[in-house]
Image (tube, rainbow, N blue to C red; front, side, top):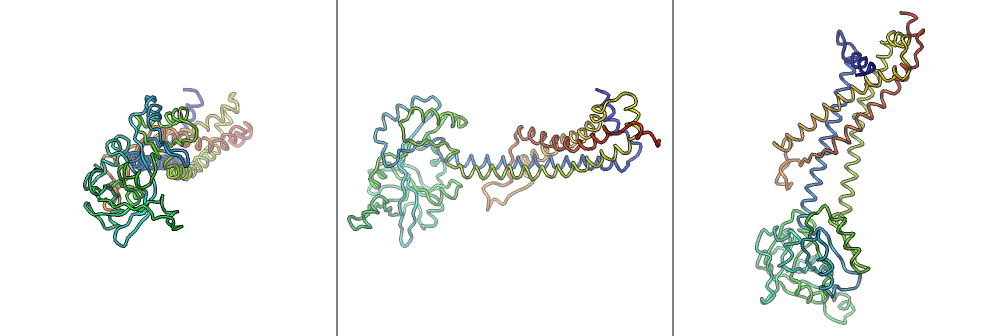
Length: 407
């Protein structure tokens, strides 16, 4: 331990009685601790919600989606299959026809997104099969009526259940029908299943039919290929590989790209919370600045003696900087421990519950990340260090004759 560290530690702890400066230092430590703990907890809650949203979306969506060039069909599926199969990270893929259509039942009609899929392969790239709550996800194109699977909210608003029939009006014939050149394509289907994804957009606007039914209804070929990877963390890398081997014009989107707006908002909210809570630590550092300034005044004689013994200005400044940093480090360490304990208690016991009738989870989600502890500790100690600059310079600029003249 250097002489500067030794003196700074003695100044911080060697108080014969609980003086005013000591109380301010204690308040500073508590303020930094509370601010640090709040940052850890809030960032962990953001991580929890981010992870929850990602699990809901990725559990339903593909990891990568390849979309056809505009106004073109993916007619040569075999060649694309060979290209995609050559990428090791790809686990499985499935062709999809995705188009808008009007669904009609009784007096109710809605415009929804129809996905024509291969029911044998869709389970390998999407989690929709695992989300079926009533019926099944198995299409029988040989039956008298073709089959359709609806989202729970959509089925509820249409007032249909398993076994009911609905009508789909294709968007492909709308333009001609408006000009009275032809009738729009209409298909009658039987509801064979209902899914619930816990995502209001999917449950309210998505329906699934077979690939053959979609081809017949929309008069089109494959429009999209959905891809599942062995490791979702390699999505960006695989996206670049696919872009390099596919012909020009294809659009390749990762799971992040599919919901980029949502993740951008969540990222902004996270940074705003980080900055605002850093202000709590900044407020606490005003106490550090005040206590160090008063310590400099109280220890004026000691400073004069140290200068007369040969202490340089840098060493004098370092003593008070270290004293302020000790306050910051102690508060930061205690705050990290407090935040860690609160997060663990929330994970284990759910201290802050949520109404399961409203939310899909029973308590606030929390996810601990070691990088948060690093960023929070760095910000806290940096702010505390900035608060030590003024009083340290003031102590270093004292003249020894002025420091001991009236002692």
